[in-house]
Length: 239
Image 1 (cartoon, rainbow, N blue to C red):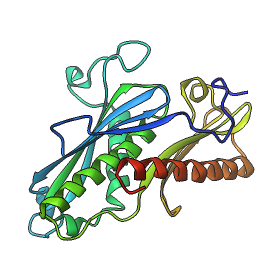
Image 2 (image 1 turned 135 degrees about the horizontal axis):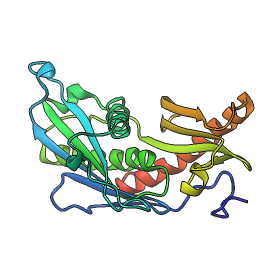
Image 3 (image 1 turned 90 degrees about the vertical axis):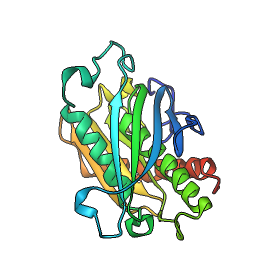
Image 4 (image 1 turned 180 degrees about the horizontal axis):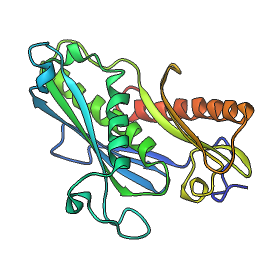
């Protein structure tokens, strides 16, 4: 039995609440159980220097954890004077995941800043960030379309992310902290609605895993992504 009493293929309670920031062009509070991430999308004219004059836009992300998002207070990275390696890795993952399904030419020379701030962490903050960030981006681009600032919608497929792992109970979907901290294998899957793979991060923590267990994780991830996309479509008014 899992600590949360869930079935192996059962997600935590998923809530994607939109319109939570009155200033951002798009916003979503993504809740995976007790994990809560505020995702906002801000649109600015102009692009990084390497894209100037190309007619293409840019989508980039920043990620951070608030001081009391974990069991013990953590320092703000700004007070340390630099971002940690984990933070940089996660925000690059978020940006890559969204750019894979964004037609930057249709966006025009604009930059969409995605900010993912972890309010409360209980495992799966990066997967909640990607899932909520896509909703925020979708809403922001809907706004551009409604104002007539762009002629064609730049987003293709829906993108979501979910964690899977191998515990003493076998492969399971959507690990919370209690499971993640003791997992034999920990994995994060970023995929499109049609099942295309954007990125898989999987690491054996205690001992090597088998192909059979990995295949089961993959199957669970596909199941979870489909459920998350349904939540995303409802949140963006497409479901």
